[in-house]
Length: 474
Ligand code: FAD
Ligand code: MLT
Ligand code: ZN
View 1 (spheres, rainbow, N blue to C red):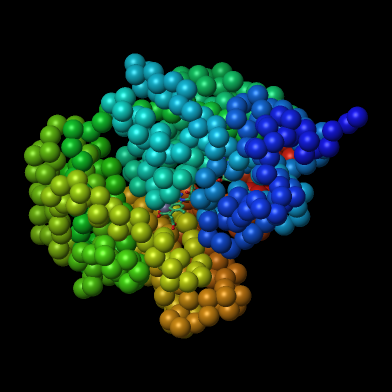
View 2 (view 1 turned 135 degrees about the vertical axis):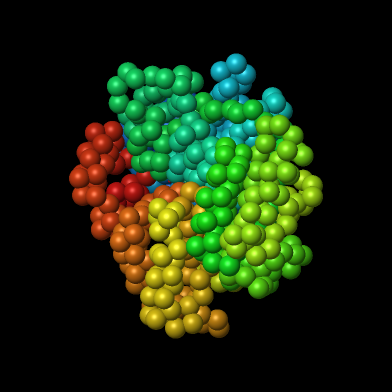
């Protein structure tokens, strides 16, 4: 007697790890709805493998049944890349049971973890071993390292440590054919052909399923100080960034910019957070200085940087956090912008990068363009200025119906903003990825030869479009 697909999947992962709509008591919405609640798909099943062998068996079984697989980690992605479509024919491969720390190699400065390991748990494991794992983002309490690798996530420490790609030394991957690529080398140098690791990273689950990764560890800094500065313009913020690079060198581990309206939303929706110095200034900047010597050395450096900035007029006021609790509160304000914006209502998010030197002109021109075309538009601008990455977000005018605003303006706003990004030599996705959200925009803004090479790679590695179809390349 031949088993059905679901019977086979239950046989592989255990009945408790194959969730379906057949059981009316099971709520699949945590896996079917994206974080922004913009899309709700319908899964044939949510399958939760416990080890790499089970992933292999699931992939082979799905391939035999021509059933597409949507890999999913913490489902915190912001571009609709990790949820199923509405057909009811795709399985969600939820990686969260595969969350073990496999090994720490202190001499090699590496940690090897399974893909479903929550980022915060990875940070804690590194910390307990006396090291720093620097990847840090607002969703770190629920996103997974597999998802971080899948999207090549950025976050708030990229200015010093790079994005997820730069933190990865090796991968274990299950291919669309159900083979295992054993690539957990932990080597810093390996020139034996094409760089498959970097091909997999940022491929958003369309080329292979990452089951484990070897990541870099760093020495913990002796001190980490945070400052909050009011700046009179975006030009001044860029000038301050230059000064900070000059004065702090590799000590500069964070440089985030936040617009006044973005901070006003945090103040409105989370008044208990007490946002400093925001009302009389168009922009605030959050800076972090990590020092390998001592706290007093770090404080001295920070104070002299801020004095110079005040003298040069690129800062109008500033505070340096007195202790870790204060520093955490400042970071918490920054990390709360996303949630405050969501609470304010439906909005259009952008995740763009532009050469830092051109950001002031981009913002001035694009703000004017949008104000002219969308009367009353409210800009929620913030992001990783140190990396040239802005979340250049657009909120509906005060009192407007968010869904009507999206219906009438979303596509046009995207086109206005992305055309500007292209004119300024930027990218339409700096860190969140393409997912389903930007899939129809990629052919417009990506170099056609690059796009053709991407299609050839997809065809070679996943000819039957088993892995996350409809994402990245459509
Ligand atoms: P998911 O959302 O589950 O999946 C994301 C993509 O990766 C999907 O395409 C999925 O198919 C693929 N994928 C997941 N696991 C695997 C795997 N094991 N193998 C292959 N493919 C896989 N992003 C940033 O870059 N910087 C930020 O600062 C940032 N801040 C955020 C703050 C908040 C409050 C929120 C909600 C999100 C933020 N994000 C940020 C976006 C998101 O957290 C990241 O994209 C994160 O890397 C996604 O991880 P995840 O485990 O939730 O992945
Ligand atoms: C951030 O930097 O906070 C994130 O990328 C999330 C967002 O864009 O809202
Ligand atoms: Zn970001």
